Image 1 (cartoon, rainbow, N blue to C red):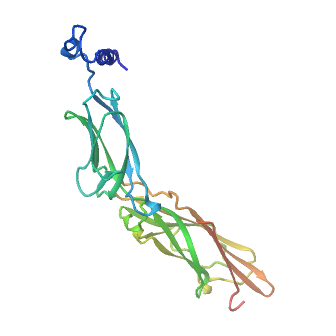
Image 2 (spheres, rainbow, N blue to C red; image 1 turned 120 degrees about the vertical axis):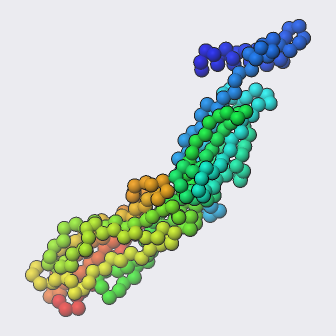
Amino acid sequence: MSAERQRGWWLWAVGLALGGWGLLGRPSALADEGLGEPEVQVEDISILPRVPVYGTDPLGTNEKSVTVTLWPSPLPAGKKVTVQISKTSGTGGATFDDGSTSKDITQTTTLKVRGTINSSESDNMLISATYEGEGMSRTFTVSTWPYDLINGAPSEGQLFGFDVFVFWDSESGNEADLTNVKIREHVTYGDRPDPPFHLAPENNPEIREITATAGWAFDFHEYPKAEVNFTGDPDHATYTASQKYEFMDTVKNTSWFNGNLGNATIERKVDAAGDTYIFTTKKTGPGNFTHTILETPETP
């Protein structure tokens, strides 16, 4: 605390101890001179970079804390600082945890903020704290992110391998709130032994964007039977791919990152089995998912 503040605080405390009255029974000269009460200041508002939409689902009860620091704290009797949430442009919405957008505080206070509508622009929400028209403010963004990707029950088709549903949750508990987010599948293939794996991927890595608000996608882990070359000696040949689901925030313009959506490994293998071969497809991924299928070619 600066020497000036220490002096102001000391003089205010003395004036308070005297009940605001001098020794002769009249208002204190300290108060008359404007020295008996320290200047009220908003010292800081903690950074609040992103707030997700707050949902009614138990998964979506996310709220963020913001601390408004005042000096002195508590304030002198009768003084108050007004803290408000507002929108500066575009669309978006947020409230305090009681549903209001304005609160009066008399001391340093930590408040809970909940998103109500995703922002259409980065940093278009404002939280301000003012005393007699002066104070400070900080901007933030309401944006809801996905998490907790899992794999569902697999299904088998006409190709080697299988297909599987993948699902993800929203911070708000409602996938419809993922309007600011893009999700993509990012698969990187390792070395491909040929024989037996004759078909090469069109791209490496392969990237496929998915609609985030759907909350699910169909994941294909198939390999055409006609593209498996069983001639030569393909025993124990293994072809591995690394899969990850990434997301980005289009409003905050983040990079693609994995967050907590998790990674998976897809392994394809050909083994000799007597006078035929076994084609194995195995996926190990998020949600403790593991699925293996063993198949033999129609024509060894």
